[in-house]
Image (cartoon, rainbow, N blue to C red; front, side):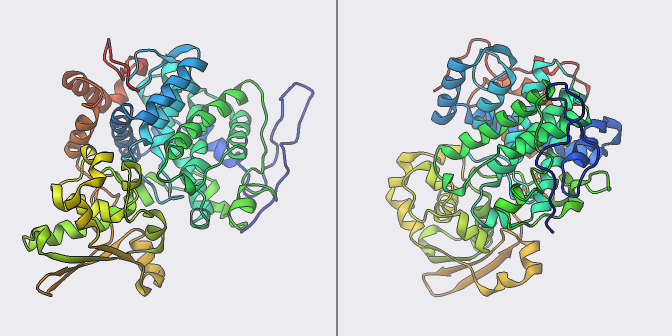
Length: 484
């Protein structure tokens, strides 16, 4: 449904920025703001808090790994030139920065390797934007662990509810929803940590939504992680501006020139914009944690191929071809059949499958430009094909397996082996155990921290609910080698 509202909040009084919200039209941001401002830890179910904590652990791990990438180095060099010193830690750097700059640098690092989590509520990389923003503001304010965890829940639920309200059209039209919606989660988390009241929170959300952007043409380039960083920074900045009295548009979502009208064919299910109805997006649809460091669209197909290879003890030279029947969104995301760079390889189904078969497990070490010219890999990639068949016209299947895959392996002797994978290992339906998540964290963190420091940080994160000051969390060695 489409709703319209006033372009700005009706003002009351003559205090600069002193806009006040009296009545919310359907689709306005005030119900979200009311929920964020009122949220307290005791109202969050333990299962929801547990998912948020796991998102924090996973995101900080991939952030540390991503901090050594060239794009994260470029982001840090920019912040070093433009930001004042502060209390917020930056992954891989000894210098602490002001919250917006730290959110930007860490947001870039968190998404640089495309190893961060996903949520189907908006088809977004939620935590890579929300966690850097929340952590930066929490450290700047010396907040305790419970406050940080509450802010993470607030940010995730707000962003994912907007994603549910908008549906799939936004993503299918080519908007990169992480850049477009990420600032909402970052802003809500920051507003919670800043203890903004309802009006200020509503203004902050309006500012964040009105200034959002992101296009899927960014895939395979530095623009993708940089836009994630910008979304984190933008959300923090919007909250800080609202704290100073700036006002934002009430109808940023529902106005005739708002997000839904301009980018989503006017589609907006306003019922999702009123939290407190017992539904928690962190539980359903939930969050999918990546087992391998490539686009999630490839994971189900990889799992299917590896399962068949293991069951039938296949060697790569026995395989004549691998055909993957996948949903249209997978076709749209995995656009590099013959990748030339590691960034392109992250959006290549042939690479994900071939590398997994050849190396047993696709790891960060395989995201190497030099590997893209390896003849054995190129040969195996050439045997992988991808189509989207009629089966995906079934709405029920599309809902149950949004990035699923039907895999057919044809052997050189003509035999055909088949399987179907609805959701990959690590998805909300098939979550990684805490131990496996911790192992992923340690492998990622080892790219930036010494093993002892990484282990200590992981232990601290699991104890987050009782931590008294999250500023004590350290994301770099005491005397680190600055990367990038």
